[in-house]
Length: 98
Image (tube, rainbow, N blue to C red; front, side, top):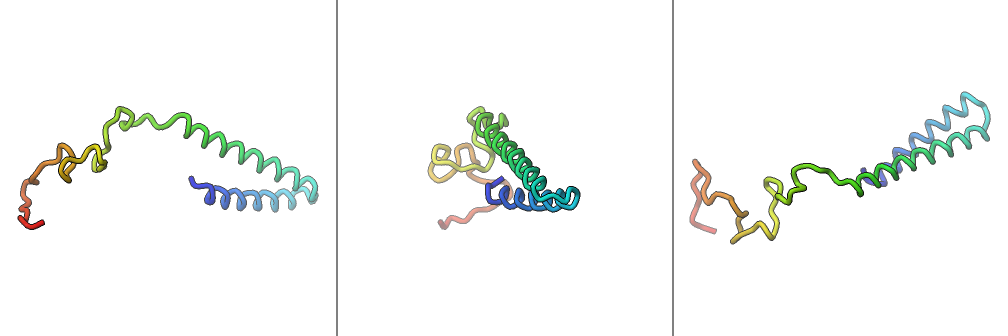
């Protein structure tokens, strides 16, 4: 999740939380402190999530060094074609013009 998207969602959630807290408590001071505590909890969760994503990357099929299907990289290219790609697909005729 991008930071601007997170920030927008957090501000909307904190605004809803502050309005609800004020309606329930009728105290601006309690609303301010509760909303501040809620903001700290949300920020801590976001930071922990980003930290986990950075420290423990996904352990999917890409970790063994294989390039995903359809991925073209400079190392996997040979004369403009991906290594291992068929020269001709069955049932498809190719023109001789390039």
